[in-house]
Amino acid sequence: QSVLTQPPSVSGAPGQRVTISCTGSSSDIGAGYDVHWYQQLPGTAPKLLIFGNINRPSGVPDRFSGSKSGTSASLAITGLQVEDEADYYCQSYDSSLSGSVFGGGTKLTVL
Amino acid sequence: QLQLQESGPGLVKPSETLSLTCTVSGGSISSSSYYWGWIRQPPGKGLEWIGKIYYSGNTYYNPSLKSRVTISIDTSKNQFSLKLGSVTAADTAVYYCARLSRRGVSGVLILASYFDSWGQGTLVTVSS
Image (cartoon, rainbow over all chains, first blue to last red; front, side, top):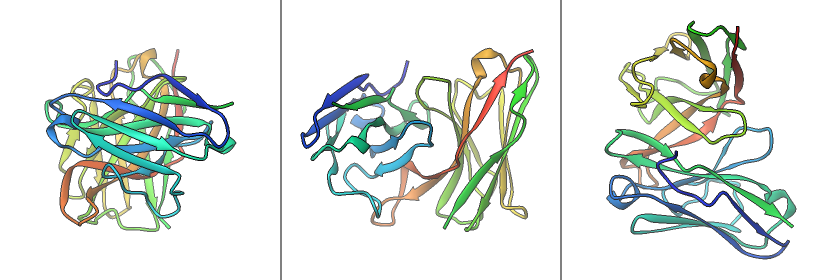
């Protein structure tokens, strides 16, 4: 069971907007630690998508955005494209574990 | 461009020790701005952080694996390694090595370091 909670799946049609939530607790997200997001395309390694809650690495389209409030964070994807179909993971730091923690992952299906 | 490459046996027998090495190219493993870490992903499941190491040799492990894990670093070879002892079938997974950035956007050191570069991963199967 993952420390951070994500919905197992979300879906949307091309061009639509979807959001993926990531819920933590007072020892991780709620303690003020940054949340980061990764995209894992089928059969490949995860790729950094958002870091420091809201920041996009160079090369990541601005269709992807992150936000954080209280003990939760969200990843929003606008203008959905077929190539966005992937698994998405959130990650933060847990002070009780003194280490990195991941969400269980969310599978995005583009209908 | 930074590249990380995992290497090691793809098959390990139960109760034995899993050993993997990550070779870093295109950048120095001795940078003060990064940790170097291991993550695993059982088939069809999510990501699990195993541990990380600083170039000085300081290590940090997932408490759930701490009793069985050792991560080491060889700065002369630009490599770091993972050993996981007493393996069982539950340790079957794709193992990734990755670089963790210690600094946020402003350059300040952060506790919630993030994995900004990943190896391609290597599948390790535990079976007799």
